[in-house]
Length: 443
Image (cartoon, rainbow, N blue to C red; front, side, top):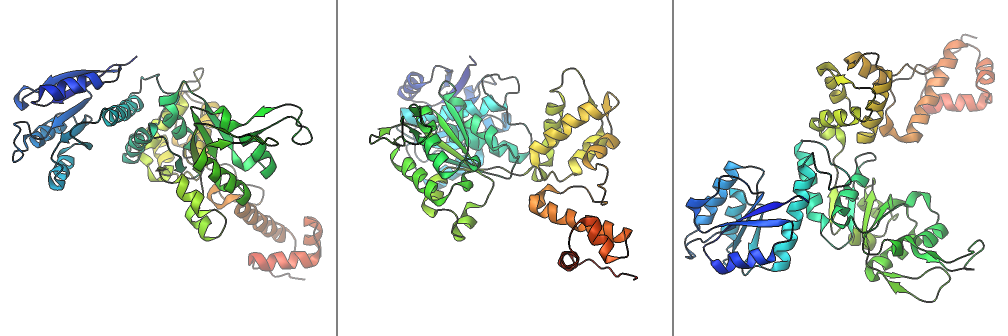
C-alpha cells in the first residue's frame, strides 16, 4: 500500500496532535511550528495555518503557501484558520492553496479532503496499480478532469457524467468508484432496455411475477448495495422509467416486480449521457426534476478534438497494447493524428491504433500509414472520408446522394437509372429533387 505524507505547519501543539490522531492509515505526518523550518521535500500535501504567530493581523501562512507552491507546483496545499475573512481566504487560493478548512478542524472533513487528495495522486501516478483504470493525458483539460474525479470519488449522492460518445465516461465512472473497489460496480446500458425489462433488471422480480419469471431475481440496484450503479445512456429512459428512477434516487427503496414488500439499499448512482439533458427537458423528453436530482454533482468530459495535447499519450498507450508487434510512432504520424478531428473521440483513436499495429508494414508508423487508416479508399460512389459526427441518419442520407450521382453519371436515360437502382421513376425524381442534384437527361 502506497504511503502519503502530510506536512503540518502550525504553532499549536494541540492542532498537530489532533491532526496526527485523525490521519487515515495511508498517511503519516511531518510537523513544523515555524516557517523557517520547512522540510525541503518528502511530502505530497501540506496543511498550513494562516496565523502562525497567533495574531489575527498577521498572515504569515500565506507566504508559506506561496513558498511551498513555488517549490513544488504539484503539491496539494490546504490552508486553515479560525478567522474566516473572505479576503484572506481568497489570498490563500491565489497563493497556491487548493482548499481552505475552518478551525477547529472537523475530523470528517479533514479525512474526506485527504481521501480526495490520495485518489488524485494515485491517478497521476503512472506506475500505480491501485486503480482499475487510468485517465491518460497531460492537457489542462485532463488535469482538470482528474481533479474533478478525485473530488467526486468520496461524495455520496448521485453523479452525472456528460460527454460525447467515446470520451471515456465509463472510465471516469470506474475511477470515481475506485475508493470503493471492494464494493460492487454494476453497469447498465439503459438504451438496451424496454420499460418492462428496465423494471425487472433494475428492481428485480419474484417468481411468477410474469410469464417466464421462474424464480426470484435480485435487481441490479440491490446487487450494487454499498457500491456504485453506473447507468449509461440515461437519456434513453422513457418517461415512465424516469419516474421510477427518480423515486429510487429520492428514497433508496427497491420493490421487486410482483412483490408487495420494499427494502432500502445504499447505492450510489453514477449516470452518463451523451445528450444535452437541459435541451431534452425543454423539448419535453426528459424530466426536469430527474435532471436536477442527477446533476447536483456533475462531470463534463471534453471531446478529444479540444484536448489535442492528450493524443500522443493516448496513442502510445494504445499502441503498446499489442506486445507482439512493437511500433514506434514518427513525428509526422503523430502530427497527422493530432490534426484529425476525432468525431469518435478516444474510442475512435483506440480503434485507429489497433488498425495501425496490424496494417503498418514497418516497425515505425509514418504519416502515410496514419492517413491510409484515417482516409480509407473511397466508396464505389466516390464518397469522402466518413464523418461520424453526422450520425447514422446523416451518413446514410449523404451516401444515398453519392450513389444516385454515380448512377446518373453512368446513364442518360431516367428509366435505365431507375431500373439500375431498383426504384420507381417517380421515386427517383423525388430523390433527385430532395438531394438537390443537378442533372439533365440528353434524351
